Length: 510
Ligand SMILES: Cc1cc2nc3c(=O)[nH]c(=O)nc-3n(C[C@H](O)[C@H](O)[C@H](O)COP(=O)(O)OP(=O)(O)OC[C@H]3O[C@@H](n4cnc5c(N)ncnc54)[C@H](O)[C@@H]3O)c2cc1C
Image (cartoon, rainbow, N blue to C red):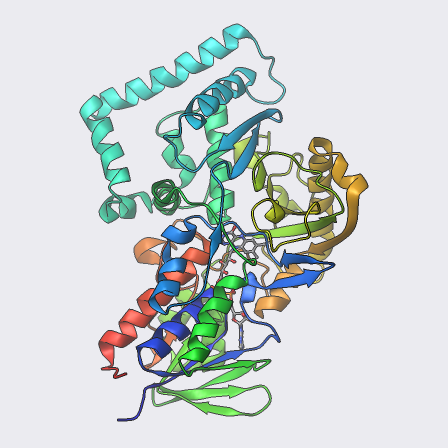
């Protein structure tokens, strides 16, 4: 019996993940990647002895999440590095709070409780901090919690809500998908630091503002991260993940074609037939799986091959915001926070925190997502030297003109970073900037989005596009299809689902 011929377009986490799973299951898989390098947004390059992430990655569940599950299923060689105190948060411009993996960590709870109370005392920027203010604001928060609990039936209701959240009840999350993160927090409190943290969490986890991000999706991701207690980075940089998958795929007999841009998905009478590349080659296939994003996939397959209402829905889908970065190769250790990440929570009104993304301005106080890979990964740089990657939320568009806006945002980010860590400036050997235009070129999309499809209300859970398209034999994989989760993990979860879907539909023999 002939093996099922599968062509995968794109070698991001989704593409490389599904390719290795299906090759391992007995298909004959070819991966076509347009770039001369593999991994999509997980691309990693070398510079001056450092191994530099083209993005800025920290993996929510590391060895306990779907990325490692794929690796284990195909016997890949992916390894993780981490530490207990993994991230340091700066809240209210001065309070440094350690994120120590488990919320039940005996050091973390009191430090966060105390820091939170101090930030509550300070109130919104511009308000005067007073002891009285602190007591009043905290009393108000507890009063409002008490009132809401009472309205819904008291302590039993509160406990049942917490239980549903922690039990990862899918029906409960589906309900929460219909409300924004802000609406969810508003239901409990108007406490300023609580809203600031929610706005921060929505941008760092979903990469969309909390006024439009899905509460169900954010809580789904946050609860699983806490349960996993294993925020990590892959040893060897983000690239190590797709590299482990594709190495395993090639060992199993699959083929990887770098620099092979898919131009057309061949469709005949509603059924997929193969892929034509920009250099004129044709790859026959029983199944085509596209990691190129839903919009580009429909364009490559010809919009006329899809029902009109499907295309209308696809045209209306919105991508996430971006994270743009500046990377610093440092001759000496200049950031000492005893962790591999420094996250600055912008001390501005949460509702307007990300308005600068639409106005073309610089942020008044930028949100920072800074990683220090050399603090955990011994392969990231030479001993004694330090690699720092500063990430700041950026606009969605990936046009060339957007680079000027990105420059303004990065300058504001750098100002804040140097204020906290002045030694970076004097020990910098080189810097590299990546803006939305850079990411658009990397993925072939007009957007510089960080995640892929945005996890906005109306685009998560049951509203997420299915991996199966109306064209027979054409599937989607990656962050545009099917799954939940944080960026890379969502793409991996999607790869697992697509592989299962195909394995169950077609009887595959090894
Ligand atoms: C700056 C930044 C920071 C991030 N931080 C995190 C983080 O901390 N944690 C986290 O989990 N996630 C993070 N992410 C998100 C994460 O990297 C992505 O969500 C995830 O990698 C997307 O994977 P994917 O499989 O959907 O597709 P992609 O990575 O977008 O890959 C798509 C692939 O398809 C290829 N392709 C497209 N068109 C064609 C074509 N016509 N022919 C052939 N190939 C084609 C592209 O070249 C690319 O290789 C970050 C992303 C960025 C950019």
